[in-house]
Image (cartoon, rainbow, N blue to C red):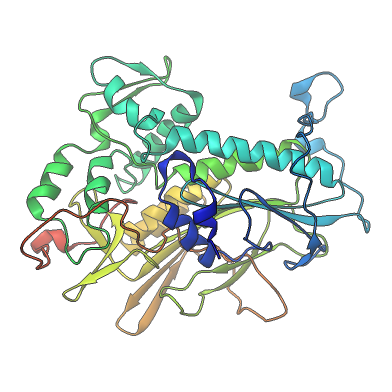
Length: 445
């Protein structure tokens, strides 16, 4: 039997093996077994499929629905003014899943009109693919990759989505004291070469990558919406890009009246109104170790949540465990196991704060969360003990029960995949950091 990674073409140059891995990690309310979007219908208040509701793929797509908001003409209503759909037997749950951004993207909603749901889901999927094509750093011809060439000699205009992400990156780099730095693409590409090997990069290579990295080389002009680089730095929006895509997709669903919705991209989730007959969406927090017990469950609505951590991508060599989350100051991965779960209004902010939470010392991370009115839970393992640090207003954790299915967002990493061949080295001994290079790190690699 062929896997979904074998049967589906992965857009944007993302490694197909990552998609297969995420199928195993994300608990979906739909079977993942066909190429293209997975479409299923569920009963209200349940995460289990109530029966297949597969549309005719041979029929031409229906014309896109018209959003019912004030921006489309006279007589329209804003999302806040949308009338509530009737609470009746006709309200069903629908799930739409597809590969994008190196993972599985999932939309869920409860609504009474399956035709409208499918049309809106199709538009939202197209939007995610469009953003993936812009923001990916795996595709050499993406706007993100080309920016490193275009913006060095003179200021360069960028698309609105890329400007949004660059502006948010600039704000988060400042407020996090550099813990969020998407201008470390040279560093992350170096570390990708060592995936699947039993070595770290050597210090000389890391130092060279650091010289070619850093947000200090990025200059934004908000009035002209241009970018100028004083060095050809490369970008990696792994700490913020998925959150942005979640927000854009969710806002599209909401604009068409699908307010009881959830969008999930690799553990970056935005949640709308609760499902019928529920107080909220049940979210189970990922464990620190593969096969371990989750940290607990929270019930949320009308908010965003993201978890970052080293659940799958940490490597241990000669007794030293390092994550894929990198420190722009030292170039080394953070020490683990650890995770950070952030709750904010927007998914882009939850994505960035969760990354910063894995990097900063606990007190600094909690102070950062409190300064922006966010909620944050940090988990650190020390020997056999798991230490939890949280903001005072973080929701109460409850233990999962067998009769209450939940969304299970994994940490934002995936099982390690050798996306590029490792460099040859006659000496297989691990290169170990020393001195200040052993301190916990910064940024998502």
